[in-house]
Length: 414
Image 1 (cartoon, rainbow, N blue to C red):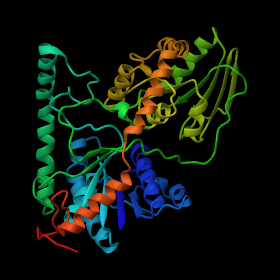
Image 2 (image 1 turned 45 degrees about the vertical axis):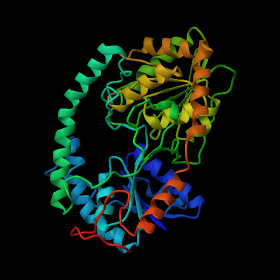
Image 3 (image 1 turned 60 degrees about the horizontal axis):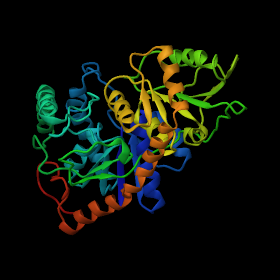
Image 4 (image 1 turned 90 degrees about the vertical axis):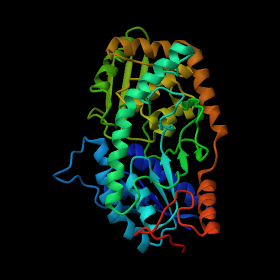
């Protein structure tokens, strides 16, 4: 079996794709990761087979800020370019990132089975939840359910508009407006970061976080016995502006009351390498975050799934300084679970008080440990890949799990 993994170039999507490729290789399954070129050199040096995701660049007549267009017209033109490449490379199954819809559509055009990969919790709408991104716990009682129902009605206006855009784009490349059946999904998160829903899809599988490090280098924390604070600025466009500036100012304030050691860990660390001030020692650099957080007492981050998953998997509590969208959603889930504090609005003083609260209250560490323990309730993604492909082979129906058809709409068996 040869698997194509398709993901965009953002770290939060490319890195989980690389992690899945390594898991497949460990069980003798060959895979190729189609993504942006930024990470090709480092991924290739680790023995991964990578290829450039075609037609990724935004065209002059396209609005890169229009999410509907990304998931519609751009996905369609990318799928039309990718499909013949998958056919020539002899791909048997596609795993496509949830926002890189082109991978799923290209598989459908080729008539091969596909799986959707969510490198975070399941963000599909639910009849039992408020809209994802609101950061709200499910409403309780009649009033709470009425609130959630009203919010869903409002958000469904945008959902339906997006569905119409995607339907038109799919028809433009010879696919039906909507897939015939649903696609199996891999949900790559800790169970502790999920929320209960009455309509969890039967074909959605919790597989645990897919974590991957873009370097083998390490950063040595400042010497001493003071609490270690790891600061990881957000890599996402929706991240809070000047998060690092506010955080360092807050830690300066807190260090006037208690000594602290700080490591700034980032893909693009700030120019400073080391800094000393009364009660505060700071170093910065690019290094393996999975190793670093094991020594941390608290992690300050933007609330992106990757850093949250690394921290909580190590049983380390967090202070989140979230932006909008899924950062706010995840930050509030962490706060409700008890393993962290969300800071909004953002001020240096608020960050200082949040870090102090987490350091002084062992309940946060206990909740983070429970989040780490939740990983026992996940399944092996490689087994799911094998199962989906086997069902396809036994049924001799391309896309048996998703209703795929070959280009032109003609069912095909290989």
